Image (cartoon, rainbow, N blue to C red; front, side):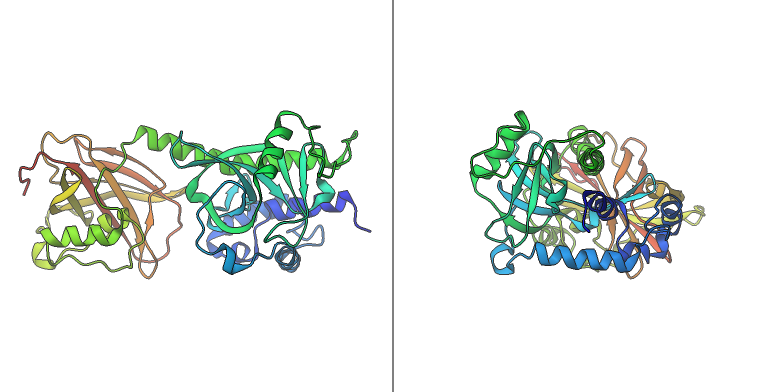
Length: 391
């Protein structure tokens, strides 16, 4: 017999147990060890494991089956129910927090690119006061509910697959329920009130933890953007950057298909004859950094310089590297650094956090990875110059 107690157990599993691909990933050995020590489902103390995950995934796919022709290529917009990108799933305190579905409530202007969302869950057995149950939609084939009490702000880059689109009256109903959990529109189903020791209370605690995991990460990114100056270039695509760099250095090439302006800046490779001579007295691991000088947002000069890695080691967040870039121009200020970590055969990964001292050329960067094999550092530093050559 299906019960709310069983629904809560499934919710815990769905929200905080690693999916099969994460369970099988040997790079997460320590995390899985910690998880198995505290999770009765994955450890075998309760029926669970990969087979249960696959069964649950299949069930969700049947309930929430979008029509691809209607959802492909759409930008995040108010009224959409979207899945937070799967690659943003993350470990925290022994649990793996899987990205949830969210309903977009507002497009915000401050901070720029932010969106206000309400979290969504698919099993209405766990709906309570303030939850808006939805059973119909242009791309919705199953039931779900919107948690009006669980709203937060996300970066616009966080959104993945689109599962449904709803009218303004649904969005407004969620906003009103946030202010007054009893203010249901006439067409809405009213969930039963909460009771003492109600399992839905524990479900809500779980949902708050899920929301906090992704909202706190977005908040850190917004603060970083405020503290660090934004890149001011006239180019809006990696192809435009590539053409601009080749105008000043024809032999530059890129080993990867470019997906962003930042990648175009940092992943450029110079021809051998343009590279700086290696300094034999430096025993540490070296790399070539790109110094790019701009005028009015346009690249005017590209210069390769030598950098050294002083130290690299695993950290809680992934992998850390520190080092120094030599040949920095005197009197420079307001520069921006872009760091990518490359493991041979894999796509370079941008730094998730970093510190940069442009006066000394010293840097410290953290990458969300656990590398295996030969690794390289790709770096670009961008300056706004007055037009004089720094070569």
